[in-house]
Length: 434
Ligand code: NAD
Image: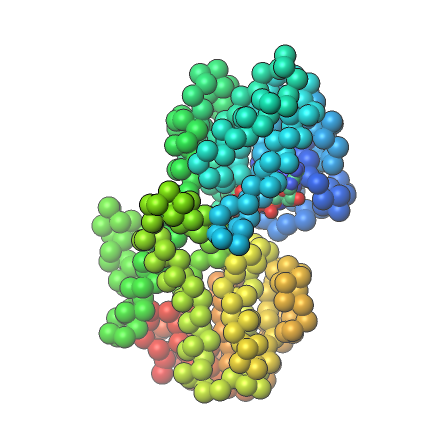
């Protein structure tokens, strides 16, 4: 089948590479020429485990093409996936400007009947708007059906999620479009839920709201654990044994980040507010997350006093391991707060330095060598649970740092192993050491 994917970001690229891999002829279009040039040369502009080999292979066997040319992308597509960004606006609502542009462009360039499938996360009612935009501008003889098909992939495990997702949601009331989509996804052998457009749109927001709330919930429990001498890992395990609760997403830390949870939770709060239906639980989850991201610097000040002039290693910049994405990363909050305190910061990350530098510039030092980051420091803060950090021999903190004080925002080490070293160690929801 001839597939076009609009947007060569995390969702668009993974979708393009994986659909090419299962035999479709895929054209991925983006408006950023530099991105497309890079992709045409077989390199990925993003880091996603397993993505680059899939891109290379399918470019080579001509299953996958990249273009900035809308005529080439849209004129003869059987199905078009919209995977453009829906960033946050100032009031927290989803910015739909890229969606509007892509809908206009599709309407202008299509030359045959087509299914348009929205993977971007969009507020309820947006797919109906996309349908209206396309219907009012397309050639009158062509039939276009817009389907909501929200994306649930996790950065860092996106390829795995594409092939082994928990479910595929198809939102349309049009029986032929529903049957077409079902057939399209059949070979993936993933449970398919067919529903209407508004339900599909709402499922995506509700899923992210629930997961964000779950994280803020366990972080609140963790903060109490710290005050009563309990250990959040034991507590989380104990509650997770209850099948109604389950073990997933009960890891305490310094909060969620990334390109989805922060913006989608705020969009849902804003959306509810517009309807005079305040979503108070989610508002609280958002506030808890904000507070959680500030905990490391608060703990640092409580431990060493003023941070002014202190040499601090920040270990990890990505919002989570296995991605180079730093959007809304807790590390960025930590950088901002450390700079406000007048600290001298050197950050370590294996792959997220270029993206961080674009935001933070040279206000901090950077290194891809964790030992170098720790050299002669007064304090280390862990913001991402990279394997390179989790597997660092703990002696390194003793041999490299001026004062071995570690504030671990991701509970990277067992208390038992830390207990064998003279390291001052504060983690989240667990007793401190010594
Ligand atoms: P991204 O910012 O990484 O990529 C978006 C791409 O769209 C950019 O490369 C941009 O240049 C391109 N674009 C903008 N306008 C375009 C146009 N008119 N034609 C072609 N390309 C255009 O975004 P992302 O992280 O891939 O997210 C895309 C959507 O999917 C968002 O709505 C997001 O909420 C949702 N989503 C993201 C994830 C995730 O983990 N990143 C997961 C699920 C859903």
